[in-house]
Image 1 (spheres, rainbow, N blue to C red):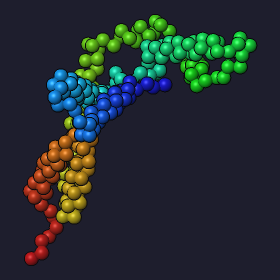
Image 2: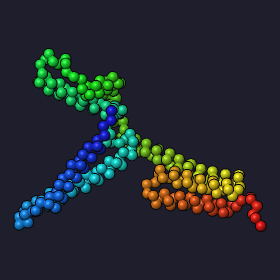
Image 3: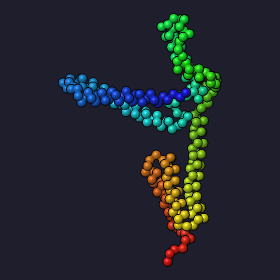
Length: 241
């Protein structure tokens, strides 16, 4: 089970947008009492406050979208795959189920308790109970094991391997076409190899760069390197006299 807390922010944005649309239509079609200065000031303050809330909610939404790039470490996703989250979800689901049972008992006789229909909440609770239920000790261990120093160390290791992979990728895109063009020194091979690797390089860096101009600049720089190599290397094909 996964609970996306960021989805509630969309409801907040929708509510604030609804209020702003209503305010805009009131300003457009409802005549305000311009003689009453206090009423105008109060109305403008309300609009200003609503606009500020909406702008702040949009900034928060942009931050939530960036947190989604963290994958499993997204703080806005609560999932039963984590020990502490699983215990938390089951606790509140059991509270909801108990409250439902109390309300049902107040409306029905004791003889009807056995005829109470099975809800989706009960089925989900049964499914979670059938899984391996984590213990409180494991939950505490998982909760307090992820210290800031450990997370920073994991981020440094991850960044190091990313730099290594980028170095290997860059070296492969430079060495591979040069080897092909040197071993098969023909004009057709040079043109086909340089074109194929330039297109492949552009597609590859588009996964790592966000701005289109940066992708274009990187592809152009890589193409310039291959063009210089092709121009200086030449071909073994005899030229027509």
